[in-house]
Length: 371
Image (cartoon, rainbow, N blue to C red; front, side, top):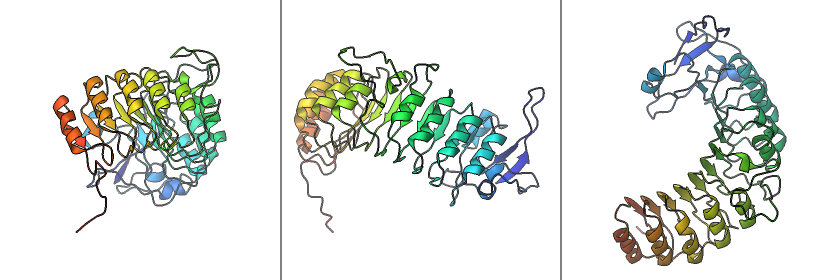
């Protein structure tokens, strides 16, 4: 990696900053040293005598989009810290102060960061569009309140934030008093504390409206949402999913590893999210043919479907999907003991446009490895 001073933007009022241009690694990822970031933002000399950005992070503000594309870098101003040690909250605050124009920030795996770091991000990076907080296991609901200040946020990853329960998250992202959210992608995968409570899902008592208008803080306010990952949010139930999953424009959804999801919940989700193109329901052992017989007709746009390890499904589900989901391209029914290869061959004949069917260990095949 080498560094060079970033030129001052004329007549813009933007202060001089510093840009690092990392060389792509052989596997396509970018790695940096984090000595400066761990040291609270202390600057140090770069390889060519220039000055590194705080943390030697990936900051691409001055590279034209075409050059960033050629280098395999993000097309927007962004930062991805990659280091064996976690930066401190003070270092994150310093970074936010020195790089207020960042639009992309990845703090995933920085397990020592607390709510204060997220508060610093919210105050200092008002133009942030992409934020990844995966595996921040000290982040709590109190820190989630700061997300309300990121009005331009389009993508939020909070996977494996195990202390987040949902109350403040819904209030921050779904307040009726703020401008319509631009958030298009939200991952709450493996947030094991996420609970089916009124704070997470707006309860419109007595209404049958498939798209209820929320009267208070609610994730239903995320009208622009295109992708939602609720994998392994094990405390979610049919009732909670039916209330919160009312996104007619949602394109991608993962409900894998939800032990409480049954046919009733599946049918409710199908009615609330009819535009799905990608759906993952692996390891949902309580979903059966009966549920798919009712739900399949709502998902005519489905292209990718993962039903692996759904133990109650049989060839009847394949028949229902084959009749309704005519745009399907990829299907995964691996380790579904009730589906056999003969049923899969009939399905492929029914939908010849399906390019990939994952069918390993179907029909109750013995999983024991033999040599």
